[in-house]
Image (cartoon, rainbow, N blue to C red):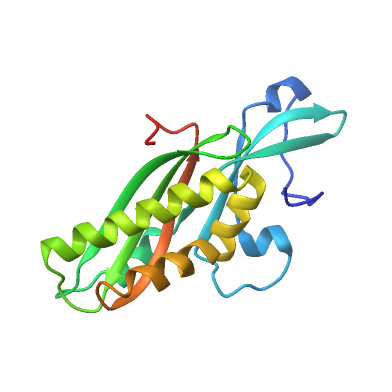
Length: 173
């Protein structure tokens, strides 16, 4: 998904003991560039070892809790969504998102915004393969599309996809 990038060094007496280890790294560490959104961490798991090289697969991402706490303030609404989706290539993902408004929103507005968030997340997952879907999440394209659609209901400050996990709970159709 991200090409051949060195994620780090690890020690093991046998290469087979590396399988299943998880690596956590920021997007900046992965690309080697200084990126503004350094609050995003990718979770990778070693699934294959070839002599001295270990290969990983993407298992999820998460956004730094400190960053999320800085967005939440008194007098605003934080709208959370937790939805399991199936991508076009059959991969199951649990996608958690958060939406922050400028001022306190009513219950009906919160429900409408949450519904818009879930509809966009579901429709995009059905139309894209896992690699493309993850790239849209990491680059912020999915968040900006949700922002554009939901701001018509109530003024928003920020929309973030806070966490993804592979193999989520029950699927919502």
